[in-house]
Amino acid sequence: MPVYESFVRRNDLGLTAQNIAFMLRRAQTYSRAVNGDSAWGIKVQAPTVTLFQGTSFATRAPAFDETFSIPNSIAVSGLNEVYFSKLDAAPNTTGSITLLSTTNDSKTITVNSKGMVNY
Image 1: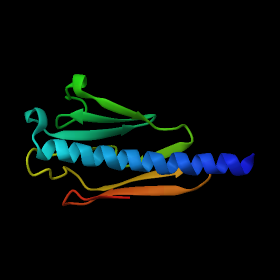
Image 2: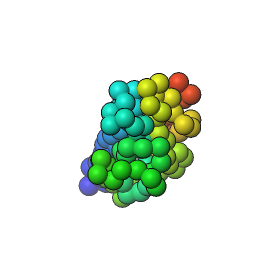
Image 3: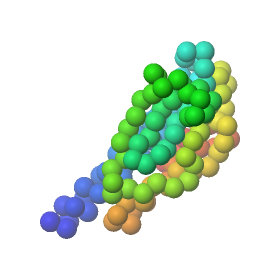
Image 4: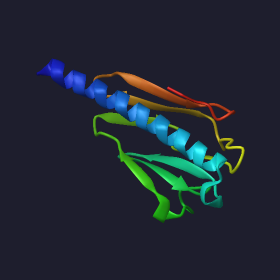
């Protein structure tokens, strides 16, 4: 049973990292395409990650929100909000989001000044 639980936790970690990276890339693509004539971003606020329209989560248009749930077995630290400007899709901030599983495995997702998302 412990081996199975460890497998599930590592799988949750990998899927969560993929989903956050996907949402970052999606926000960047929407911003570059000027979807809705707006910038787009993500807000990481456990237990969810939200893709939002606008330049801040507080002033977003909630009707366009898309959310993804973070499993309880994963702790999140680092960047908690980033948006990409309209047209050039440059990020407003750079840094990383670190995911730590209860099995002490971790994944780091980085956003650089050019808007590249790596994990």
